[in-house]
Image 1 (cartoon, rainbow, N blue to C red):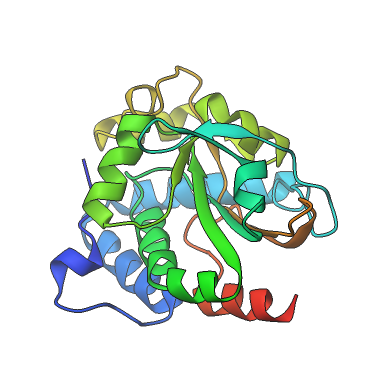
Image 2: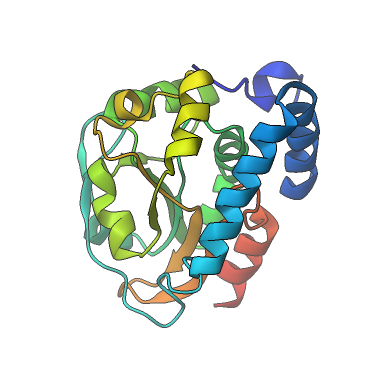
Length: 229
């Protein structure tokens, strides 16, 4: 189970804005996914927006919770360890089964040298198992750690977690997206996508969360924020 990466499907590196890459993926998905399925996904997003999930998530100015999570090789990585190197760009994503998550991770991978030049590091957190994260790092050629947040314990502290509705579960089942297997838990919970910049003391300098999984911050915006804060 894998969304074919842009780097594998075309020669060279796709440097288009993330919104253009996502628009192309949405157009491709719309050709093969029934309209009723797309409408249900849209309803779930609208319901989450009505609940104000992103609005109530961890905001700029807050203190980020400390954590220790296994990376894609099973090694424990702590937030203190990451922040000891400087500021931290932290991305919460749903999993390797999501083409938009794959697109975001590839885009962030491309700007990793600029992130490091700005005196920061990059890590990403998802509820998927260590094995799934290992596959993603290998297949997407990622050069930063993917951390496995079992049962969304850290994402819950960022107030990003929601329970997948029963109707949507059925759709995932039909599409062979087996979240209990992928995440190693029967909870059927996911985080909404969230991107943060943390200062060395753990304070949140920048926060962007969105119930719409097809909307993520542009890598250029992340770099601009790093250079200005």
